Amino acid sequence: TTTLTARPAPSAVRARLHFAVAQSAVAAHLPTLLKKALRESKRYGQDPSSTHNLRGLLARKEGRMRQSLKFLTKAMMAKPDNARLQFDRAQAFWDLQMWPESLDDLADAMALLTGTFDIDSAVAAAVSTYLSVLCEGSGGGGGG
Image 1 (cartoon, rainbow, N blue to C red):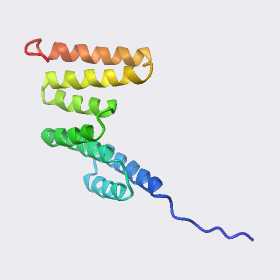
Image 2 (image 1 turned 60 degrees about the horizontal axis):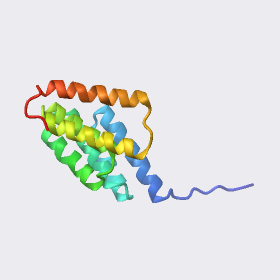
Image 3 (image 1 turned 180 degrees about the horizontal axis):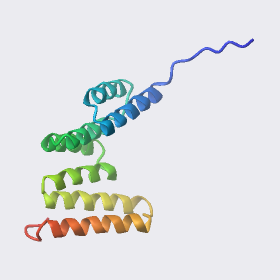
C-alpha cells in the first residue's frame, strides 16, 4: 500500500487562497472575515497593492468614500502601472463627484491598457462610453 502524506502548501499558494477568501468577503460584505483573510494573505506574502485595493473596495461598498480613496491611492502607489487599480479609484472619485480626478484616472487606465495589448473593440467602446458620460456629468466646467 502507498501512504500519502500531505505537504504544507507553498507560501504563495497560501497567500493566494487567503486572498481569494478576502475577495469573497468583500462581495458578501463580511468585514471581519475580510480583515482576517487579508492578515493571513499578507503573512504569506500577498502583494500589498492587492490588499489595499480590497480594503478600498469594501470601504466604498460601505459608503466610507474618503477611507476608500485612501486605500485605493495606497494600492496605486504600490503598483502605478495597474489599470484595474486606476479604474477602481476612478469609480470612487466618481461617487464623490470629483469629475476631473475620475477622468484623469480613467484616461490613465485606458493609456495603460492600450499601451500593453490590443483591446477588444467592445471593451474600448465601453470605456469610451463611460468617459463620455463622465464628461457630460461633470457639467463641462472646470474639467481637468
